[in-house]
Length: 225
Image 1 (tube, rainbow, N blue to C red):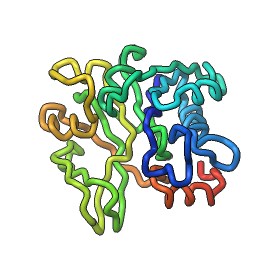
Image 2: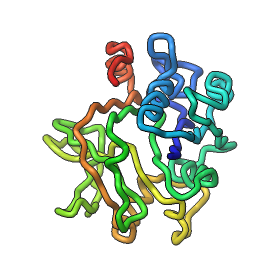
Image 3: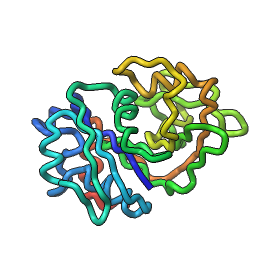
Image 4: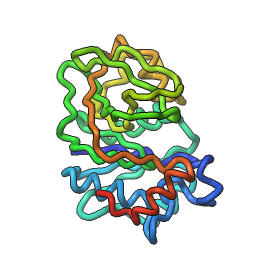
């Protein structure tokens, strides 16, 4: 049970309230947001975590060291920002066969065991949302296979990418990719070839990437899981 957590972002939109810290280290009532992500993974039965880090990664290493509540922690350090796709691809060297991938600035309180690959190399956790324009929309067929990804526009209702994936170690092997690339753009460009599986959830979701949602999570005092 391995998981990759993307924790290398600069947190540009959050700098007005959280300065000089990696975004996953944003303080929530005395402890970093990343603590809640790791607590969630522990609850889900994950035994090994690969933290993909870059900006001021030393702060993350110093705080969490090489273990969290019995889970072993590895650090995959990006000397230069590789984008979400490049970061995942580089971190896969720690993975045996398959792994969950999560964002270090998001909580999506799903049951990871409900994600299944079947005949695909990737399964995405989708979130049902209402009245939103901050996220793109994912369209699926009646078998739950992704048909297309839509750009960010206002939607009264739709499915968004919840930022949790189950994927196989060899997902990138058949593609000629640059060292730096966006995972979201990779999925969009290769949607048909990948035959992307999905699972729809309606569980608690928060992304602290903007000050408004950071303060919302703060108001819960982190007691949401």
